[in-house]
Image (cartoon, rainbow, N blue to C red):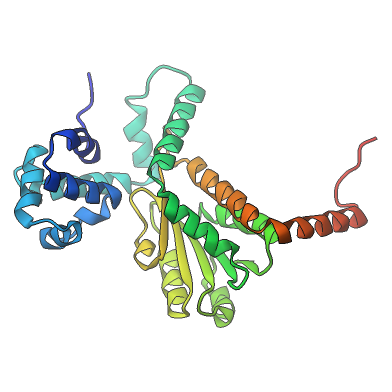
Length: 289
């Protein structure tokens, strides 16, 4: 038996049947899902440049009694999305198909990647790459309990591409010295996925006070830190596991690295040659006969 459509899927399915104004508000919600519809109906209508009755009609066409009913369903789904690993495991395990976990997990990862790439705005992505490639800006990166590894990976390779790249610890007692040297125009790349972490939000707020440009890489439910970001890149992360999959985030990081490298190749090529010389002199890598 088919499962009932969720709020987002129901809205996407209804798009062809909506009026121009209804489609305008639906598109706005989907583009900023779910944050756009968590506030008041007045704020949503203003942001989507439609009237409040248009929002009500959209909700009714989707099968809800009105905006409060629609918003209640949305909040319920958001609450489920932010569940602990134990609850997430119980939810997917009961209805898991009989195919091998390798196939099920791979299918989920591929679907996440396709959904992520389809929703990334190319202009936003290019703008982030341009920020990271700008030699006049220093780059800082940090992540949360799980995503700190992505920040570490980004910094490790970005250091080869260009100078002035720093990994910030998730320990708050190390932030003041880093913030002391952060100046207007510098870039902070912050990673944060559900369950969103207060430490990421706090550092982002402090960096903005220093004049830094913030890039937030998050999931499709959007970290609160994104409210302070100049650019936000979102990824789909659901997987048949107690933990979310961060494969799509890794692809975004590696694609950003490739994009920055192409923009800075005149300098990067020389840096890489000098680095290889240093590796050779230090006998860092094993040699095979």
